[in-house]
Amino acid sequence: MSDMDKKEMVVNKEKAALNKRLESMAWGLFLIMLGGFAFVPEETIPKGAWSIGLGLIMLGLNLARYLNKVKMSGFTTVIGVIALVGGIAQLLGFHQLEDGILLIILGAYIILKPFFDKRALFGKAEEG
Image 1 (cartoon, rainbow, N blue to C red):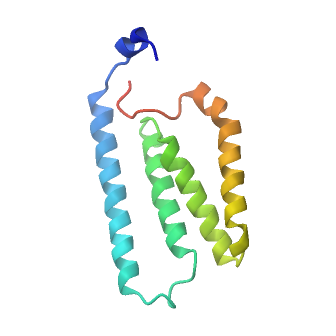
Image 2 (tube, helix red, strand yellow):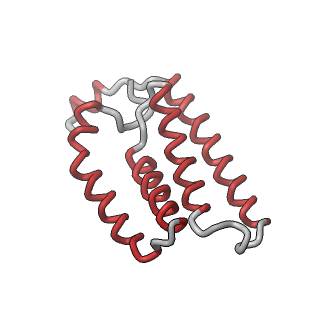
């Protein structure tokens, strides 16, 4: 990014504050889920539930950002997709496919990155 681009970047304080609230809520949900799993015996919860919960929290955070016209995080979106797909694969008993699924999702993200960049869906939340 050139010096000219850095100077033209407009900081939207309202979007930055909203993003901070959304991230705080996501962290709160994550910690509540983590604490809940600590109380429940491992045999009670099916394998994959933890990953699905994490994926839903990350994707929910980015959905809330999108609906509020705040730029989404590419990192948490990809992590959310990986966690959700991996958790579903575990629930279905496909434990050996997790690494392959990870590589497929990362490859798809790389292929689709120009599409996301063109629409400016991902970036810093505080950018106007």
